[in-house]
Image 1 (cartoon, rainbow, N blue to C red):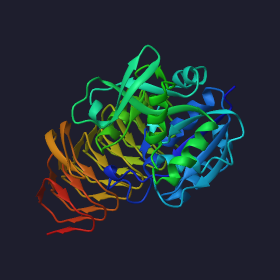
Image 2: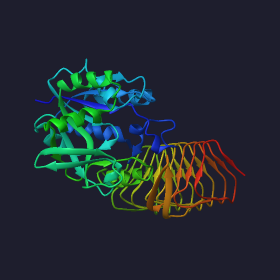
Image 3: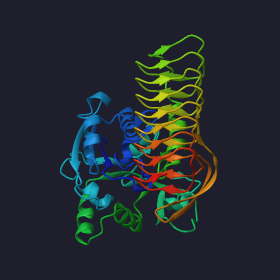
Amino acid sequence: MVGEAVILAAGEGSRLRPFTEDIPKVMLPVANKPILEYVINAIRDSGIRKIIMIVGYKKESVMDYFGSGSRCGVEIEYVTQEKQLGTGHALFQARELVKGEEFIVLPGDNIIDKDVILKLMNSPTPALVVEESDIPSKYGVVEIDGDIIKNLIEKPPVARTNIVSTGIYKFDKRVFELLDELLKEGRTSLIDAILQFVQEGILYGVKGNGKWRDAVYPWDLLKMNEESLNKVPATISGKIEENVIIKGKVSIGENTIVHSGSYLVGPITIGEGCEIGPHACIFPSTSIGNNVTIYPFSEIRDSLIMDNSTIGSFSYISKSVIGRGTKISDHFSTLVRDSIIEIEGEIKKVKGAGAFIGGECNIESGVVIKGGAIIGKRAHISSNKVLSGRIENDSKVV
Protein backbone atom coordinates (compact mmCIF):
# COMPACT_ATOMS: atom_id res chain seq x y z
CA MET A 1 0.00 0.00 0.00
CA VAL A 2 1.45 3.35 -1.06
CA GLY A 3 1.05 5.92 1.69
CA GLU A 4 3.80 8.44 0.97
CA ALA A 5 4.82 10.80 -1.82
CA VAL A 6 8.14 12.53 -2.39
CA ILE A 7 7.96 15.83 -4.27
CA LEU A 8 11.12 17.15 -5.91
CA ALA A 9 10.85 20.91 -5.49
CA ALA A 10 14.47 22.02 -5.11
CA GLY A 11 15.23 23.36 -8.59
CA GLU A 12 15.18 26.88 -9.97
CA GLY A 13 13.72 26.44 -13.45
CA SER A 14 16.33 28.51 -15.27
CA ARG A 15 14.57 28.30 -18.63
CA LEU A 16 11.64 30.16 -17.06
CA ARG A 17 13.72 33.21 -16.24
CA PRO A 18 13.07 36.04 -15.55
CA PHE A 19 10.05 34.70 -13.63
CA THR A 20 12.18 32.38 -11.49
CA GLU A 21 14.65 35.09 -10.54
CA ASP A 22 12.91 35.59 -7.21
CA ILE A 23 10.71 32.51 -6.77
CA PRO A 24 11.30 28.83 -7.60
CA LYS A 25 9.54 27.32 -10.60
CA VAL A 26 7.18 25.29 -8.40
CA MET A 27 5.79 28.51 -6.90
CA LEU A 28 4.93 30.22 -10.19
CA PRO A 29 1.19 30.99 -10.22
CA VAL A 30 -1.26 29.51 -12.68
CA ALA A 31 -4.91 30.48 -12.19
CA ASN A 32 -3.69 32.27 -9.04
CA LYS A 33 -2.29 29.19 -7.30
CA PRO A 34 1.31 27.92 -7.27
CA ILE A 35 1.93 25.00 -9.61
CA LEU A 36 3.04 23.01 -6.57
CA GLU A 37 -0.39 23.38 -4.95
CA TYR A 38 -2.00 21.51 -7.85
CA VAL A 39 0.50 18.69 -7.32
CA ILE A 40 -0.23 18.50 -3.60
CA ASN A 41 -4.00 18.55 -4.17
CA ALA A 42 -3.79 15.70 -6.70
CA ILE A 43 -1.73 13.64 -4.24
CA ARG A 44 -4.23 14.32 -1.45
CA ASP A 45 -7.19 13.46 -3.67
CA SER A 46 -5.57 10.12 -4.50
CA GLY A 47 -5.63 9.25 -0.80
CA ILE A 48 -2.01 9.97 0.17
CA ARG A 49 -1.63 12.27 3.16
CA LYS A 50 2.11 12.12 3.94
CA ILE A 51 4.38 14.18 1.69
CA ILE A 52 8.15 14.55 1.86
CA MET A 53 9.18 17.75 0.11
CA ILE A 54 12.71 18.19 -1.22
CA VAL A 55 13.41 21.93 -1.25
CA GLY A 56 16.46 23.97 -2.16
CA TYR A 57 16.38 27.07 -4.36
CA LYS A 58 14.58 29.85 -2.46
CA LYS A 59 13.09 27.20 -0.19
CA GLU A 60 11.59 29.77 2.20
CA SER A 61 8.92 30.71 -0.34
CA VAL A 62 7.78 27.07 -0.46
CA MET A 63 7.92 26.45 3.28
CA ASP A 64 6.27 29.74 4.24
CA TYR A 65 3.36 29.15 1.86
CA PHE A 66 2.61 25.49 2.61
CA GLY A 67 3.88 25.19 6.19
CA SER A 68 2.87 21.88 7.75
CA GLY A 69 0.51 21.17 4.86
CA SER A 70 -2.59 21.29 7.06
CA ARG A 71 -4.25 23.95 4.89
CA CYS A 72 -4.10 21.50 1.99
CA GLY A 73 -5.18 18.53 4.09
CA VAL A 74 -1.78 16.81 4.11
CA GLU A 75 1.27 16.40 6.35
CA ILE A 76 4.49 17.80 4.87
CA GLU A 77 8.03 17.10 6.04
CA TYR A 78 10.81 19.13 4.44
CA VAL A 79 14.36 18.16 3.63
CA THR A 80 16.86 20.48 1.97
CA GLN A 81 19.05 19.72 -1.01
CA GLU A 82 21.78 22.24 -0.21
CA LYS A 83 23.23 22.18 -3.73
CA GLN A 84 21.21 21.37 -6.85
CA LEU A 85 23.35 18.41 -7.90
CA GLY A 86 20.69 16.46 -9.78
CA THR A 87 17.37 14.69 -9.33
CA GLY A 88 18.94 11.47 -8.09
CA HIS A 89 20.84 13.39 -5.44
CA ALA A 90 17.62 15.23 -4.54
CA LEU A 91 15.62 12.02 -4.05
CA PHE A 92 18.43 10.49 -1.99
CA GLN A 93 17.92 13.26 0.59
CA ALA A 94 14.56 11.65 1.47
CA ARG A 95 15.99 8.24 2.38
CA GLU A 96 15.68 8.74 6.17
CA LEU A 97 12.14 10.14 6.01
CA VAL A 98 10.48 7.52 3.80
CA LYS A 99 9.00 4.95 6.19
CA GLY A 100 6.83 2.77 3.97
CA GLU A 101 8.16 0.15 1.58
CA GLU A 102 6.62 1.72 -1.54
CA PHE A 103 6.19 5.41 -2.41
CA ILE A 104 5.67 7.68 -5.39
CA VAL A 105 7.92 10.47 -6.64
CA LEU A 106 6.70 13.54 -8.49
CA PRO A 107 8.26 16.76 -9.78
CA GLY A 108 6.75 19.78 -8.08
CA ASP A 109 6.39 21.68 -11.35
CA ASN A 110 4.06 19.34 -13.28
CA ILE A 111 0.27 19.27 -13.13
CA ILE A 112 -1.12 15.73 -13.02
CA ASP A 113 -4.56 14.21 -12.60
CA LYS A 114 -5.34 12.23 -9.45
CA ASP A 115 -6.65 9.32 -11.54
CA VAL A 116 -3.17 8.80 -13.00
CA ILE A 117 -1.67 8.83 -9.51
CA LEU A 118 -4.16 6.15 -8.47
CA LYS A 119 -3.23 4.10 -11.52
CA LEU A 120 0.45 4.47 -10.66
CA MET A 121 -0.16 3.48 -7.04
CA ASN A 122 -1.78 0.23 -8.19
CA SER A 123 0.95 -0.65 -10.70
CA PRO A 124 3.90 -3.00 -10.19
CA THR A 125 7.13 -1.48 -8.88
CA PRO A 126 9.24 0.24 -10.21
CA ALA A 127 7.01 2.17 -12.59
CA LEU A 128 7.05 5.36 -14.65
CA VAL A 129 4.12 7.44 -15.93
CA VAL A 130 4.42 8.06 -19.67
CA GLU A 131 2.47 10.42 -21.89
CA GLU A 132 2.19 11.34 -25.55
CA SER A 133 3.81 14.66 -26.46
CA ASP A 134 3.84 16.95 -29.48
CA ILE A 135 7.43 17.89 -28.65
CA PRO A 136 8.99 14.60 -27.49
CA SER A 137 12.59 15.74 -28.02
CA LYS A 138 12.15 18.09 -25.05
CA TYR A 139 11.83 15.04 -22.76
CA GLY A 140 13.09 11.53 -22.26
CA VAL A 141 11.65 9.52 -25.14
CA VAL A 142 10.34 6.09 -24.21
CA GLU A 143 10.03 2.88 -26.18
CA ILE A 144 7.49 0.57 -24.57
CA ASP A 145 6.48 -3.00 -25.32
CA GLY A 146 3.22 -3.87 -23.62
CA ASP A 147 3.70 -2.68 -20.05
CA ILE A 148 7.51 -2.85 -19.97
CA ILE A 149 9.73 0.08 -20.93
CA LYS A 150 12.42 -1.20 -23.28
CA ASN A 151 14.39 1.99 -23.83
CA LEU A 152 14.60 5.59 -22.66
CA ILE A 153 16.63 8.19 -24.55
CA GLU A 154 17.05 11.56 -22.88
CA LYS A 155 16.17 14.50 -25.18
CA PRO A 156 17.16 12.92 -28.50
CA PRO A 157 17.60 15.29 -31.50
CA VAL A 158 15.19 13.07 -33.42
CA ALA A 159 12.54 11.16 -31.47
CA ARG A 160 11.58 7.66 -32.62
CA THR A 161 8.26 7.80 -30.75
CA ASN A 162 6.06 10.50 -29.25
CA ILE A 163 5.86 8.71 -25.87
CA VAL A 164 7.78 10.57 -23.16
CA SER A 165 8.73 10.23 -19.52
CA THR A 166 6.83 12.51 -17.16
CA GLY A 167 9.35 12.06 -14.34
CA ILE A 168 6.58 10.62 -12.13
CA TYR A 169 7.56 7.29 -10.54
CA LYS A 170 6.65 4.56 -8.14
CA PHE A 171 9.60 3.03 -6.25
CA ASP A 172 10.33 0.85 -3.29
CA LYS A 173 13.14 1.58 -0.86
CA ARG A 174 15.64 -0.40 -2.89
CA VAL A 175 16.02 2.67 -5.10
CA PHE A 176 18.00 4.35 -2.32
CA GLU A 177 20.59 1.55 -2.38
CA LEU A 178 20.99 2.01 -6.12
CA LEU A 179 21.22 5.80 -5.79
CA ASP A 180 23.86 5.43 -3.10
CA GLU A 181 26.03 3.39 -5.48
CA LEU A 182 25.48 5.83 -8.35
CA LEU A 183 26.24 8.90 -6.26
CA LYS A 184 29.56 7.37 -5.18
CA GLU A 185 30.38 7.17 -8.88
CA GLY A 186 29.47 10.84 -9.34
CA ARG A 187 26.24 10.05 -11.20
CA THR A 188 23.66 12.39 -9.69
CA SER A 189 20.71 12.16 -12.09
CA LEU A 190 17.69 10.00 -11.33
CA ILE A 191 17.80 8.99 -15.00
CA ASP A 192 20.89 6.90 -14.23
CA ALA A 193 18.84 4.77 -11.84
CA ILE A 194 15.94 4.58 -14.29
CA LEU A 195 18.24 3.35 -17.07
CA GLN A 196 19.43 0.62 -14.72
CA PHE A 197 15.84 -0.56 -14.27
CA VAL A 198 15.32 -0.42 -18.04
CA GLN A 199 18.40 -2.58 -18.64
CA GLU A 200 17.09 -5.13 -16.14
CA GLY A 201 13.70 -5.14 -17.91
CA ILE A 202 11.76 -4.36 -14.73
CA LEU A 203 10.48 -0.81 -15.33
CA TYR A 204 6.72 -0.71 -15.92
CA GLY A 205 5.12 1.99 -18.02
CA VAL A 206 1.88 3.53 -16.73
CA LYS A 207 0.07 5.39 -19.50
CA GLY A 208 -1.34 8.78 -18.56
CA ASN A 209 -4.66 10.26 -19.61
CA GLY A 210 -3.46 13.33 -21.48
CA LYS A 211 -3.97 15.74 -18.57
CA TRP A 212 -0.30 15.98 -17.59
CA ARG A 213 1.22 19.42 -18.12
CA ASP A 214 4.76 20.68 -17.67
CA ALA A 215 5.98 24.29 -17.79
CA VAL A 216 9.50 24.38 -19.23
CA TYR A 217 9.45 27.74 -21.03
CA PRO A 218 7.63 31.01 -20.23
CA TRP A 219 4.95 30.45 -22.88
CA ASP A 220 4.12 27.06 -21.33
CA LEU A 221 2.69 28.97 -18.36
CA LEU A 222 -0.08 30.33 -20.59
CA LYS A 223 -1.26 26.89 -21.67
CA MET A 224 -1.12 25.62 -18.10
CA ASN A 225 -2.99 28.72 -16.94
CA GLU A 226 -5.69 28.29 -19.58
CA GLU A 227 -6.39 24.68 -18.64
CA SER A 228 -6.31 25.34 -14.90
CA LEU A 229 -8.81 28.19 -15.23
CA ASN A 230 -11.41 25.75 -16.55
CA LYS A 231 -11.43 24.12 -13.11
CA VAL A 232 -11.80 27.32 -11.07
CA PRO A 233 -15.34 27.73 -9.68
CA ALA A 234 -17.24 30.95 -10.34
CA THR A 235 -17.24 32.95 -7.11
CA ILE A 236 -17.67 36.68 -6.65
CA SER A 237 -16.50 38.03 -3.30
CA GLY A 238 -15.57 41.58 -4.29
CA LYS A 239 -17.68 44.62 -5.18
CA ILE A 240 -19.25 44.83 -8.64
CA GLU A 241 -20.52 48.28 -9.60
CA GLU A 242 -23.52 48.90 -11.84
CA ASN A 243 -23.32 48.31 -15.59
CA VAL A 244 -20.61 45.66 -15.34
CA ILE A 245 -21.17 42.76 -17.74
CA ILE A 246 -19.98 39.31 -16.59
CA LYS A 247 -20.24 36.30 -18.88
CA GLY A 248 -19.04 32.75 -18.30
CA LYS A 249 -17.11 31.45 -15.30
CA VAL A 250 -15.54 34.37 -13.45
CA SER A 251 -13.89 34.31 -10.01
CA ILE A 252 -13.32 37.59 -8.15
CA GLY A 253 -11.53 37.74 -4.80
CA GLU A 254 -12.29 39.66 -1.62
CA ASN A 255 -11.76 43.43 -1.48
CA THR A 256 -11.59 43.67 -5.26
CA ILE A 257 -13.69 46.30 -6.99
CA VAL A 258 -14.80 46.11 -10.62
CA HIS A 259 -15.87 49.55 -11.77
CA SER A 260 -18.81 50.47 -13.97
CA GLY A 261 -18.69 49.71 -17.67
CA SER A 262 -16.19 46.86 -17.39
CA TYR A 263 -16.70 43.69 -19.42
CA LEU A 264 -15.52 40.32 -18.10
CA VAL A 265 -15.72 37.06 -20.04
CA GLY A 266 -14.66 33.82 -18.34
CA PRO A 267 -12.95 31.66 -17.64
CA ILE A 268 -10.95 34.26 -15.75
CA THR A 269 -9.84 34.70 -12.15
CA ILE A 270 -9.09 37.97 -10.38
CA GLY A 271 -7.40 37.90 -6.99
CA GLU A 272 -7.91 39.90 -3.81
CA GLY A 273 -7.48 43.64 -3.40
CA CYS A 274 -7.63 44.47 -7.12
CA GLU A 275 -9.12 47.48 -8.88
CA ILE A 276 -10.50 46.93 -12.38
CA GLY A 277 -11.65 49.73 -14.70
CA PRO A 278 -13.92 51.53 -15.22
CA HIS A 279 -14.46 50.36 -18.80
CA ALA A 280 -11.79 47.64 -18.69
CA CYS A 281 -12.23 44.47 -20.74
CA ILE A 282 -10.87 41.13 -19.56
CA PHE A 283 -11.32 38.18 -21.87
CA PRO A 284 -10.97 34.38 -21.43
CA SER A 285 -7.92 32.51 -20.20
CA THR A 286 -6.69 35.42 -18.10
CA SER A 287 -5.63 35.27 -14.48
CA ILE A 288 -4.95 38.42 -12.49
CA GLY A 289 -3.16 38.10 -9.17
CA ASN A 290 -3.65 39.94 -5.89
CA ASN A 291 -3.41 43.73 -5.53
CA VAL A 292 -3.40 44.39 -9.26
CA THR A 293 -4.75 47.61 -10.78
CA ILE A 294 -6.12 47.67 -14.33
CA TYR A 295 -6.80 51.27 -15.34
CA PRO A 296 -9.71 52.37 -17.57
CA PHE A 297 -10.14 51.37 -21.21
CA SER A 298 -7.54 48.59 -21.11
CA GLU A 299 -8.01 45.15 -22.63
CA ILE A 300 -6.39 41.92 -21.45
CA ARG A 301 -6.85 38.48 -22.97
CA ASP A 302 -5.20 35.06 -22.63
CA SER A 303 -2.60 36.40 -20.20
CA LEU A 304 -1.16 35.88 -16.74
CA ILE A 305 -0.73 39.02 -14.60
CA MET A 306 1.10 38.37 -11.32
CA ASP A 307 0.61 40.06 -7.93
CA ASN A 308 1.09 43.77 -7.26
CA SER A 309 1.21 44.81 -10.91
CA THR A 310 -0.31 47.88 -12.55
CA ILE A 311 -1.60 48.17 -16.12
CA GLY A 312 -2.16 51.75 -17.33
CA SER A 313 -5.11 53.12 -19.30
CA PHE A 314 -5.70 52.34 -22.98
CA SER A 315 -3.38 49.31 -22.89
CA TYR A 316 -3.70 46.05 -24.80
CA ILE A 317 -2.14 42.83 -23.49
CA SER A 318 -2.55 39.43 -25.14
CA LYS A 319 -0.84 36.04 -24.74
CA SER A 320 1.61 37.56 -22.28
CA VAL A 321 3.01 36.97 -18.81
CA ILE A 322 3.61 39.99 -16.56
CA GLY A 323 5.80 39.44 -13.48
CA ARG A 324 5.17 40.53 -9.91
CA GLY A 325 5.28 44.22 -9.07
CA THR A 326 5.67 45.47 -12.64
CA LYS A 327 4.26 48.94 -13.34
CA ILE A 328 3.05 49.61 -16.89
CA SER A 329 1.91 53.09 -17.89
CA ASP A 330 -0.79 54.07 -20.38
CA HIS A 331 -1.06 53.20 -24.08
CA PHE A 332 1.02 50.04 -23.75
CA SER A 333 0.64 47.29 -26.36
CA THR A 334 1.83 43.76 -26.94
CA LEU A 335 1.97 42.53 -30.52
CA VAL A 336 1.16 38.84 -30.87
CA ARG A 337 3.06 36.96 -33.57
CA ASP A 338 4.75 33.68 -34.37
CA SER A 339 8.23 34.00 -32.94
CA ILE A 340 11.65 32.42 -32.79
CA ILE A 341 12.94 32.64 -29.22
CA GLU A 342 16.35 31.62 -27.88
CA ILE A 343 16.42 30.10 -24.38
CA GLU A 344 19.77 28.96 -22.97
CA GLY A 345 21.14 28.29 -26.43
CA GLU A 346 18.02 26.49 -27.64
CA ILE A 347 16.08 27.98 -30.55
CA LYS A 348 12.32 27.59 -30.14
CA LYS A 349 9.52 28.36 -32.58
CA VAL A 350 6.51 29.67 -30.70
CA LYS A 351 3.12 30.27 -32.29
CA GLY A 352 1.18 33.33 -31.26
CA ALA A 353 3.53 34.67 -28.59
CA GLY A 354 3.00 37.93 -26.75
CA ALA A 355 5.45 39.50 -24.28
CA PHE A 356 7.13 37.92 -21.26
CA ILE A 357 7.96 40.67 -18.78
CA GLY A 358 9.79 40.00 -15.53
CA GLY A 359 8.95 41.41 -12.12
CA GLU A 360 9.51 44.94 -10.82
CA CYS A 361 9.81 46.52 -14.26
CA ASN A 362 8.86 50.13 -14.91
CA ILE A 363 7.42 50.70 -18.38
CA GLU A 364 6.53 54.25 -19.35
CA SER A 365 3.79 55.49 -21.72
CA GLY A 366 3.31 54.39 -25.29
CA VAL A 367 5.62 51.36 -25.27
CA VAL A 368 5.05 48.60 -27.81
CA ILE A 369 6.54 45.14 -27.24
CA LYS A 370 6.68 42.76 -30.17
CA GLY A 371 5.68 39.12 -29.83
CA GLY A 372 8.25 36.79 -28.32
CA ALA A 373 10.17 39.52 -26.46
CA ILE A 374 11.53 38.63 -23.02
CA ILE A 375 12.08 41.57 -20.68
CA GLY A 376 14.28 40.93 -17.65
CA LYS A 377 13.56 41.88 -14.05
CA ARG A 378 13.70 45.50 -12.93
CA ALA A 379 14.07 46.80 -16.50
CA HIS A 380 13.18 50.47 -17.03
CA ILE A 381 11.69 51.24 -20.44
CA SER A 382 11.29 54.89 -21.43
CA SER A 383 8.25 56.21 -23.30
CA ASN A 384 7.37 55.41 -26.90
CA LYS A 385 9.89 52.61 -27.39
CA VAL A 386 9.28 49.62 -29.66
CA LEU A 387 11.05 46.54 -28.31
CA SER A 388 11.76 43.01 -29.53
CA GLY A 389 14.14 40.19 -28.62
CA ARG A 390 15.62 40.02 -25.11
CA ILE A 391 16.24 42.80 -22.62
CA GLU A 392 18.46 41.76 -19.72
CA ASN A 393 17.77 42.29 -16.01
CA ASP A 394 18.22 45.86 -14.70
CA SER A 395 18.44 47.32 -18.21
CA LYS A 396 17.53 50.90 -18.94
CA VAL A 397 16.09 51.55 -22.41
CA VAL A 398 16.10 55.32 -23.01
